Length: 362
Image 1 (cartoon, helix red, strand yellow):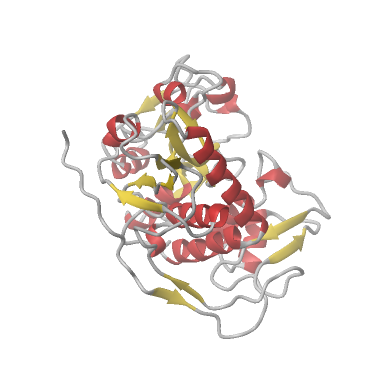
Image 2 (cartoon, helix red, strand yellow):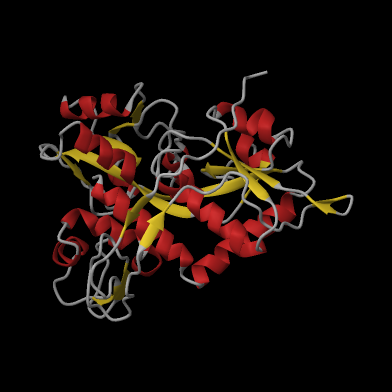
């Protein structure tokens, strides 16, 4: 059996504060001629943050970031103290970011012989900014899961285990109930492919966070993407080991029906090398992985993001094996906790804090 190491999160002591009592974030009403890039450039002083505006308002805007109209109200998140002075903005208090305790106690409905048992949550590192031991609070999703569990049940009994062997998570750790729930995981198109391993064997929580999957293209060879048919016949690059279900979801069937050519090299940097060599039309990645690679490879002047629409909006979930005797009860707990922190504002505070950190590194 694989050697499994359970580690404790490293306390980072990362913190930042705002010197003034000026409000941050709030509601912006679209004016004539506005685009998300212009709004981001004017209010965040960074046109790239159009994706942050869009991601916070996909339910209002819809599939295309360009579908905004005069009078539409957008909720703008607080990122690094901006934007200021908007209606509905909040006065940011000092935020201290630390690592969650591995053996934190929270009340859980899981009981055996009259005694509450700790729920054993499972994650792994090297998946920044979502989960990573050296990231503030163990990463964005770690902190959301931690807050949701705490909010749902109060003080009682769960802990978070770090096992840096992702392949062992689904089997045997979760399949054999050695640990109870794992995060963060993508959910395949289970409606279209119910026999997929993850669909057939696991239940999924509500999404802890939704991120944009984007097309990164060469400025010298731009492509149009307003409809799925625009991508048919194109060559896309995504590293080996990364999910591909988004390329077939919702009847798209780009890979299944060979409507596109999918190139799968070893690494993200390989994809961008193929892009700049003209061997692929676009690199298809989540926003954060793609943006970080563009920065690290010093390709900001060469590579751009297709802004007409995202390739997909992908959720990150907590999952539990269907054979677990307390599967439904545990999913109810995490989902109810997520609802509570969204209602009381804790969720948005976590998002804003981590987005400030993420964007400061991009």
